[in-house]
Image (tube, rainbow, N blue to C red):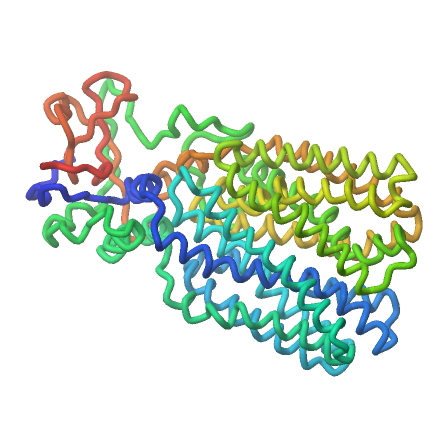
Length: 564
C-alpha cells in the first residue's frame, strides 16, 4: 500500500476523517447548536405528552356526546398509540435509508395533519382515523429525534441532551391539564372543548416545521453511509461553534482526508493481518460475533444477528413492559382516581392528576436529565424499574392504601417520580446509543414501536383488569411487568459517557460497506519513524495494540490532529 502525498495542513487546523468524525463530535463541547436542536426535536414529545393527557379527558367528553361504548372509547384513546407503533417502525427504517433530516421534517407535517383532522372529526370512525394519522407522526418522531440528538451530541453530555429532548414531555404533561381545566372551568361547551384540546396539539409541530427543514444531516450518518465529503466536514464547524475549523484545510489537502477506494491488500507472509478491531474497553454482549457481518444494515441481518437480537430484547422488551404499566395507568388515571375517590368530579380528578405530575413527575424528569450521565443510563433504568415494582406491589398488597386518597396519591406519586427518574427517560435514550449507525433509527424504531404496542395493550387491558380483578390486582400486574423490565435491562451495555462507536462496537467496520468508500486495511512494517510525534492524513499511524511494535494500520486518514 503506497503512502499518500500531501502538504501539511495549516497551522492549528484540525483534519477530520471518516475514522475521526465520531471522535471529533464526541469531544466537541456543548454549543448553541445543541441547545437549539433540543428545542426543535423536543416538540414531538411535547405533543406526545400533551395528547397523552388530554385524550383521557376527550374520551370522557366524546363518550357522553356520541354515546360510545367502552370499547369504542378505548379506540378513541388508543388509536394514536396504535399509529405510533406503525410510525416508529416505518419511519425509523426510512430514516436509515434516506437520511434522518428528511424524515425529521416529514413526521412534523404528519403530526400537524393528524391533530387538525382530529379537531374536525364528525364521527367515531373519522376521529379514530385522524388519531391514527397523528400517531404515525408521533411514533416516527421517536427514533428520528432521539438518534439525531444522540449523533449530534458529545459523549459526556449525550444522556443529558437526549434526555432534555424527551423531558419536553414534562411540559406537555403540565400544559395538558392546565388547558383542560381552563376550558372546562370557564364554561366552554364540552362539544367545543374537546375539539380545541385536540386541535391545539398541531401548534408545536407547526411552530418548528421550518426549523426542522433547515436542520443539517447527522455527520456520523453521512460518514458511515456515503463516506466523508467536503460538506460533511465543513458542517463540523457549525456543530462546535467554531471549535473545529475544517474550512482552514486547503482543498488539495482535503482530498487526502477522504477514504479512497482501494483493493484489499494480500496478507504479508509470516505476519498476522491487522483488521478493524473492537477496542478492549467495549465488552461484547453474549453471542456477539467477531468480524464483520455478511450484510450489515439489512433487515434480515438485523433480525438474525445474535447481538442485535440481544439489544432488541433489552431495549424493545423493556420498553414494551414499561409502556404497558405507564400508559395503561396514565390513560386510566381518571378511572383509577374515581375508584379511590368516587365522589370526585371530572375537574377534581384533573386537578389531582396535575398535582401528581407537578409534584412528582416534573422533578423526576429534571433529576434524570441532571444526573443520568453520572449515574449511568442503564443503571438509572434498573433503579426506576425496581422502585416502580416495589411501589405497585405495596399498593396492591395493602388494601387501605387504595381506599384513602392522600396515602394513595403519595405512593402513586413516588412511582411517578421513578417513572421519570428511570425507564420513561432511559427507554428513549438507550436505543439511540447501543445500535450501529447504519441501523440506529431502525433499532430505535423497533424498540419504540414495540413500546407503543405495550402501551396499546395497556390501554385496553388496564380497564379490563380494573373491572375484573380490581385496582389492587391491576397494580400487582403492573409490579410484575416492572420486575420483568428490570430483568430485560440486564441484556444492555452501559453507554454512559462512552463514545457511540465504542458502545455499538462499530469502530469503522461499517465503513467497509460504504457505497463510495472502501477502507484500505493492512499491515505496515518498519513504521517506527512515522510514529515519533503526531501523524497526519494518509500517513502511517502507529497502533499501540498491534501484535508487535513495528505493526501499524493505514485507514486512509486517522484521527483528528493539530500540527503547528
